[in-house]
Amino acid sequence: MASNSAVRITFVGKDAVTPVVSGINNSLDNFKKQAMTGFGMAAGFGFQQLAAQAAGVLLQFGKDAIDAASNYQQAFGKMEAVVGDAKDEIVDFAKSSAISMGISQRAVYENVAGLANLMQATGMAKDASAEMSLNLVKLASDMAAFNNRDVEEVLTAMRAGLVGEAEPARRLGVFISQAAVENRIFAAGLVRTKSQITDQMRVWARYALILEQTTNQQGQFNREINAYANQQQILDASLEDLKKSFGDFLIGYLTPIISAFNDLIARTSWMVESLKKLGGGVSGLDRK
Image 1 (spheres, rainbow, N blue to C red):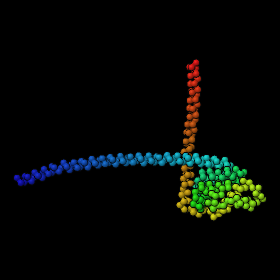
Image 2 (image 1 turned 30 degrees about the horizontal axis):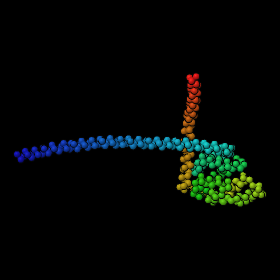
Image 3 (image 1 turned 45 degrees about the vertical axis):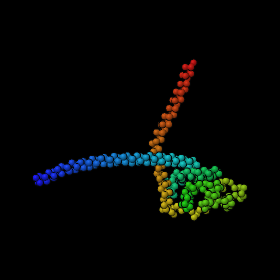
Image 4 (image 1 turned 60 degrees about the vertical axis):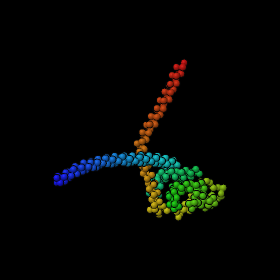
């Protein structure tokens, strides 16, 4: 009897454990399947999010590229209108200005045009104003590196100095007092008396003083070309030029499409106005 009892206990114990183990195994299998499904859904959702973000970045880059190309076109057109046939040297410099001076092509054209236009307002010739303006743009990069300033800030100070506002240029180490301007004109032998001095002479004298008083600053950008700030400036200018190139490609395709839409809108507006006039005439007849 004792032997049979022992065998029965072992058998019962085995029967009791098996369902439990099977249940655990089934639970683990179910958990594994659910986990794999969850990971798959998470991976799919993550890929969708990544794809959406990538698409957003590409769209933004495309918009920035079109803006860069459009801004370039406007700046080039302005420069061409201001300096005319004197543009060749400016165009040649702008081709490598991003690498050599950390200035984008758009910035070269825009600032040369602004400075030359200012000079021509005093009666200065196109070729002279073009040469002087380009020299100032080149100098601005050196002065920015020397004084740890932004190029646009330096160019703003230069424009102010050319019209007689001395303080902005003074902060960059250039003194353009009225007496200094008159003495520079007399030293050049342009006139003999103050009453003979013209605005054009004053602008030329201020320009000359800027060049003469910045000899220590000239060439500073290339002397520190490997510095972080200058490399960042080169990168920014190069990226702007790259966006401009890509934008030119996009504009080439988009411009005819936009033109077609504009034509369609104009035709639609004309049709609507015609229908409105026709409707008014019919209403008038009905009232009679």
